[in-house]
Image (cartoon, rainbow, N blue to C red; front, side, top):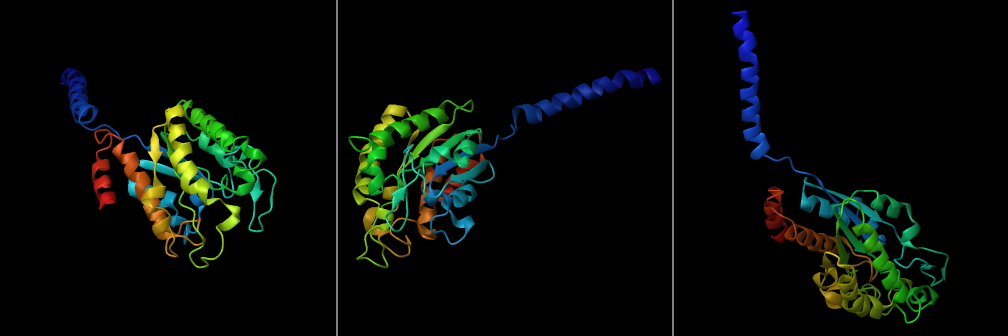
Length: 274
């Protein structure tokens, strides 16, 4: 009897292992959490969201679901320009407010991302930056060079992430004070024409980035954005606009991912679209 038990236990183990392989090895693959790192300025970090869980990054995380880990690496006031000036409400420019020297940039580079979204340009559009010494001659040269460099640095990471270029929101006069100019000496031409229509398409072609996510048009351009429910000051988005930004980015991410890898994505995409 003892000999029989010794012989049947390995056989039983083998049978259980075979069943486990059939059930789990072939039919049920463990889902890998997809890491999404969102790079940006104050529009990313908080903007005019009513509370932290209403930023577009926080909403994006809820829209994508539990298969995704979405992290906010936004830093208020920062530029893509490597020597971009800081600027305040008094239109004074000085110092260096580049995103490149922030702790959040270091953390984003160390996050082992599968997907990176970059929305930088709003503070670069301040007159002293875009048309000043930080941006070279002709204007836009240094912004373009810095953007190319950042995309390439993310693309070179061991995780080989997809990198999306995200248009900043439109720039309009403050809806509650329409006779006032846009805030912080920001330039309408740069944010409504040059960056979305010239810079980002050229950057996409040069860098081979995954794509452009056009939140500028998703927000309805300058016509729909000139609304007190959309922006608090003509630049920073409020909750409804944050939702549109999050939905636009989520749809771009899900449409380029394979539902076979994450079966939950199909239902997530249908829910977001609705």
